[in-house]
Every structure is written in C-alpha cells, then in structure tokens.
Amino acid sequence: MKVKQDYNIIFDLDGTLVHTAPALTKAANNLLNELSLPSINTKLYSTFIGGGITKQVERLLNFYKYNYVSVDEYVKIFKKYYYIDPFFQTHLFPDVKNALVKLKSLNFDIAICTQKNKEPALKILEYFDIKDFFTGFAFGDSLDVLKPDPLMVDFALKNFETKKTIYIGDSKTDLKTARNSDSIFFLFTEGYRTENVSDLNPDYFFSKYSDLMALIKKL
Image (cartoon, rainbow, N blue to C red; front, top):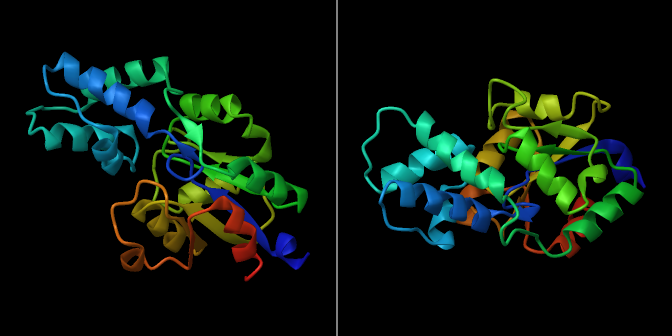
C-alpha cells in the first residue's frame, strides 16, 4: 500500500486519543478547594485544556479572578493531585485501539506529541495498553519548548525516516503545530477545541476513529 511508505503519523494525546478531562478537572477542584474557591465542572474545565498544565492552571485562576504573583506554586499543587489519580473517569475515545492496530499492521511509523509530561503520559499509554503502538515520543518535559513549536514534532520523529507527516489532534494548538511543521492536519472533532471546525480550517476532519483509514487513503 503506497500510503504506508509516504507518511509518518503523529497523534496528540489529551482530547485526541484519550478523554482525560475528568481527571484533570478533579485535580483542579482539589486545588480550588485548597484556595476556598467553588468547584468547576468538566465541560467548562475542558475549555482550559491545551498548552500544558501551567497554561491550564493560569486559565483556571484567571477565570476565578484569583490574584497570584507566580503560578508555579499552584501548578505544583495541581500536579500533586493529578499524579495521584490520572485515570479518574479517563478512557480511550471509541475505536482508538482498533485504528492503531490497523495503522501498525500497515507498517506506519506512529509517534505521540503531547504537552503532558513524560510520567503521567506514559502511565496513561501503559494503562490503556497502547504504548507499544508508538515508536516516537515528545512530551511536555522533553524540550525547553512546547507545541506549537515545530521542534516538538522534530523530536517526536527524530528516529523516523524523513517523510511527509500526518498530524492528528483536536485543538487550535495542534493545528498551529501542524502548520509550523509543514504537516497535514487531521482534526478529531470530539476533543476539547473551543473553535468551530470551519474557523480552524483543517485539511481533514473526522468524528469517529472508524473513519480515519478512509481519510488517510484519500491522500
């Protein structure tokens, strides 16, 4: 099959492969409780996801108009709670594993590019038994930069042959990462984006992983 020889594939993690918002919201509510602030629901908190935990905590505190000098101490508290239970109500999106099995059977080289730090990201990949599908990884603590810097993509693909890249993600940050790295962007529409699909203008978009292979075959 020609496609397998022409493309590497990169996946984002949160909101693309795995629904992690409930666990992140739980950590956020533990932080809010320590600050004597009211709790937040998962639907609203999911709009804060993207850019890494520091950005999430900044958005959370700004939403509550909480005055702070440095966000670092609050990030530390958030991480303490999140790392205790990163699997709370967390699950793969439907048909993710079937799609990965199919891609691997066709000899695609597949990588992960996520803002999540290595420790919790690997825990999630191992917990859902999908880590072995990936042979390239770029985590939030792999470099001194985060997405949308194209160095994240370069790092994820560093051991791959040089080919065109399909970047699959769910957010504006993922779109920018794909554009900055000259990748073809596939938008998974069931993640945590806050923009309309038409405003993002992805190269391709899909709502079900059972449709992914048909889209790739169009390339």
